[in-house]
Image 1 (cartoon, rainbow, N blue to C red):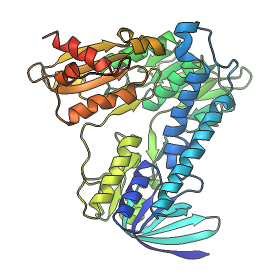
Image 2 (image 1 turned 30 degrees about the vertical axis):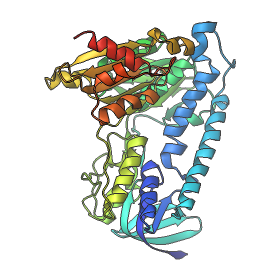
Image 3 (image 1 turned 90 degrees about the horizontal axis):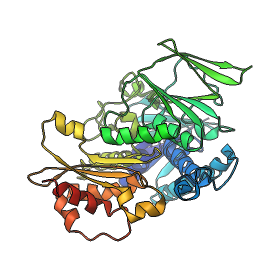
Length: 463
């Protein structure tokens, strides 16, 4: 049965952060907007398998293990003994349900029409939505592709979802393995590796690249590696996995490396990048050709090679953050209907490892390569009363600034609540402030935000 879903000013494929904000932006401009996503996936990968589950899993792990309290009560302290995956997933399920309800309410409040099913382009303006009830034809004057991504798989990795699993399957595991091999030391691989390490899992981290996260300040990465090694993580960098097999008799997974080494574990997490879902919606029928990873190229307004079709979020590649995806969707929604809009160039990164990393602006390595002079001001959490109170005496906040103008080049934080306090530095940078702002400002005491004043004084005292 084929039904006519109608014609809209904007049809959005995907209800993740980019899709939501794009549709709501159009609705705020009094345009008829519709959003399409698969059944029970309102909120997209972000809510159901990606950002929200992984970060909630992290919070549950840190709370139930009593991880941050061990500095006070000893290394064996835990809120709950004999943790099971169900203990962690209890919180995940609660948050996912509530977040889904919030998104549904936002779309309904803004009168955005929702279609549940698999979307497929029939032509540049027409989309077929298929579900158990049949097919619905939807037409859009403008279209926003925000269909997200899925974990990349490889033929030499026999995924079964329990012994050998990807990042989306991680929260659905039946039990926590005692030893895990993590293949891929990108953001996702590092986040899950550190969560597992905090749970007491023995982790071996593999990656073909000789260094970790080249876009992150080296001091932050070195500090993270120190913490992970302290938790028992083994790093195998510059190594390529050529095959993986399950040894049922010994109840373990074996990974063979190109170098001839063999690595064992009870489970293997394969986290080597992600692939865009553009093949599932047949973007070729709309006249769009994605790259080998399925990503779509866009201009500064998020227009594709077909002017009335826009794309935003993970489907267009780096930086692939939920926060930037929201702004990309909003900017696309504004541009397609002639409303001026801008996004700050100084956007923050949040990497939810244990410990947390966040940054905005340039790294020391970027400034050195560009031959830009700079000075460094540091504050260590051990110097802060709040750091002592929350049990984090290893965190660092670093300010990079011009020694002549005092303008801030970058802010880098590793430690508890890094992704929260980074926004103070971001705001000052966006408004053209200098490091003197932090020197002259009164911060609440005791707080982690006070680290900005300590770092500013440290930096200025070096001049």
